[in-house]
Image 1: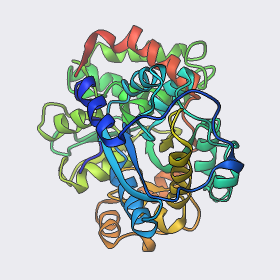
Image 2: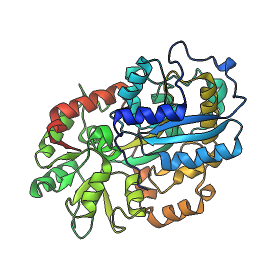
Image 3: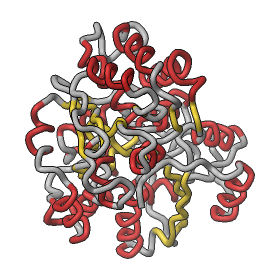
Length: 403
């Protein structure tokens, strides 16, 4: 199944489902349990997980394997999907009411940044270094950079998904742009035919917007408010030729496949995954900007404040399990977060055979030279990312968003 963001059902329905699944919520008041006092429960617990990053397909096989290996600790995980733009307010409302009905959130940089700023996530590291330290130490260098950016509020479950890229069908585009200037000229010549999704809810959208300051030579690519004069001016010009901005990446892929758009923003992961599951034709091609910088993306595991000590002990043990090389090999998946594994030692030949086949069949040989050719940089910090979302909505896309 293609990973994408789905909106919550009606708030009352979601809360009702969670209340039934949880039985009763635990208090969200008081300090977090001490690492030295945490103990795995004497009887198995049920956990509630909400995925706002489309990472269930990677995480669920790891979690199911834990349940099979440790049934005395974990009997079941209830999986729900949600919207990255809504989860923080829902967590905040639960915590204000004194109950916590969600134990795990699978999130991208978007909801994580907003959640840290709003104070709804529990700090995991170094608070629980005793439980997680050895796993964290085994991160690949890129994953370690991404982990450090979380300030200890989440763990990196899988990473890669390099962008920005442009994606197109050869029958519709014969000479794709390779510079921002060429993209602007192409969009002007083909009004309404280029598209990218709301960066607050789209990895390729975020990669495009965050990548431009490096390519355009802005004064400070890490500061979207004071250092992106060239980027904001460029995006305003480009926006004149964009019909609307969809709420998520899946919509752009669908528009490309059905011919409504001829050129879209993409990333290595979305390129591989969408072709592997036939959302986009197999013959779709990609184009990279010259002298670019790759914006790394990742999926995180975050823990809301207020969950019980017994649930927290199991969640931490589960995270440690998910970060073992054997489980991380499952992160190759269908290429969505290409290459995928966050830790050292998780090689492709350890992945499930079906995942190996996807990478062999839909991975591009050119990625082996293209990705190392340019520097890979982490995304904006949580605070800067939130500021970027706000300014983009205010000056670029807010009036042209389409859900």
